[in-house]
Length: 198
Image (cartoon, rainbow, N blue to C red; front, side, top):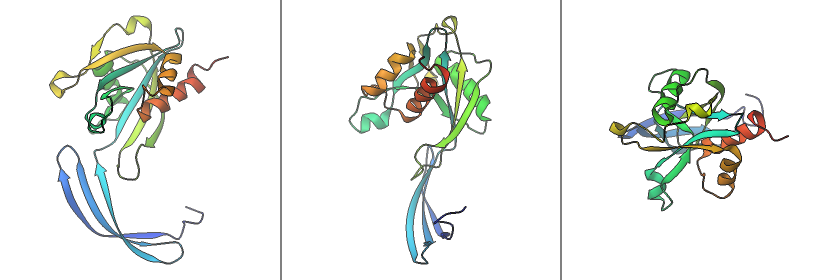
């Protein structure tokens, strides 16, 4: 690394496990040497749930995208509408990202994918969450989008499948109906690169 932070150093002094339920929550005491030479001790928490993958299926001919709407407890906890419109996604669970996203598309959207296309990997909340999300797109057609409900009931999922115009989805971002970061990123990518307006 070059630049003003190249001389910054850190050392882990101790790590404590706070929770190991659905994911691991740890707190670590660090000794950080700032680039100016100042030394600080800092406590930082990390929520480790593993990496994930997400996908936006798109139909260029009709100008449509395939999304899902499902219950999300953290949104309800915040007092918001808990039924979020999202791109299909899931944790890798030791699978390769492409394999996992094929399975998620089938489980959540009822969609068998031929060739998902990898776009990029991003940290979604790097201040506290370790997860890297691998982003994909894939093509589909009207005949592929017949299912109305998806999700794995034994995992508590029930997902409304939404085959909608990209323009409508972008309007849903503007009016606050779509509030999920990964979905906004994928919709903006689609508007810029997959189905740009002439």
